[in-house]
Length: 400
Image 1 (cartoon, one colour):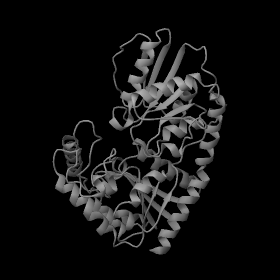
Image 2 (cartoon, helix red, strand yellow):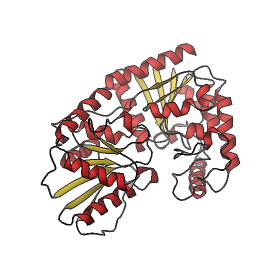
Image 3 (tube, helix red, strand yellow):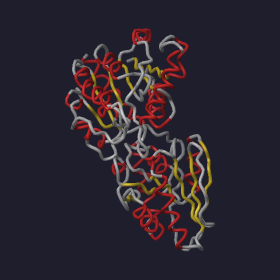
Image 4 (tube, one colour):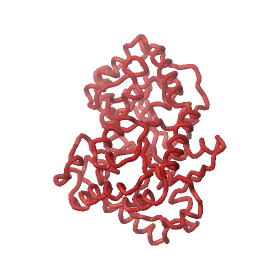
């Protein structure tokens, strides 16, 4: 079977997940091709250079149209791909991953209505019309007329959201997968969910190159604690870094003899040190192996997301033997059982503060880290993940 993967880029959480799946398929002896905008513009698959400027314009318009406090909406998405040129790759199936400014919804429907197609859901945008995450708003289940996330272009959002289920409904071979059951359950409530032929929850692939002994011992009597936060874009409101910073500030202020260090991995971001015993260390982007080494050097990985699908950092940290505290939102509870394979808290400063202190006081951290590692290794068995994808590919092709 020849699988053609389409992704706007190979970076970011969705792009990395797509690239890892492609590599795993190739390593398993299957024919897999991975196309991104940046890597293949010169091959004639994508439209001419003017589209580079148009994509920049669309990104600017979407950013300008998004209100403060919301993740950037994407009411506009350019169809940069020349669909007829996809046939040169003679794919048996096309697997679409992150698609912003690579495909429009019309482009996705054109592919799905003419070729066996699988779409991986990395966020909610395919059924909200613009919002990557709805942040508790259920307007997408109705008309989105009073969308609080945008200044204007609401008619465009409503049109896109309402038109796509009808367009995709013509296809007999369009299916979706998602790494969390949470996201699939939200899809099921929408008009699009009723048009999807089949769906499946399949975890993302996490490279497993080193599973050293877990570190999570007792924190008692330590006065120098190392915390880690990792995200491609730490400044996104959904990632909740501001909540974690405030929680650590409150702990540091109340316990001046305790030295706290927060390690931040991802796009550079600056902070002011408000108290001497809370410091920040910035690492930029790290390779998978370098991040794994950092996981083993710190005391606690914190994932304070306000909403998230299935953040790979949770599983990567668990596999590396690190102790993880994350918020009880989105698909995260599918990765962590509280006080069994990690710790869960609510997405607010007070709950984070109390939960960090709970972790520090826990006498079961080694056992919890060990259970988290074992759980993540089972969940992310690459052979099983590849087999699950091949199974759904085969069903889609047969239905086509």
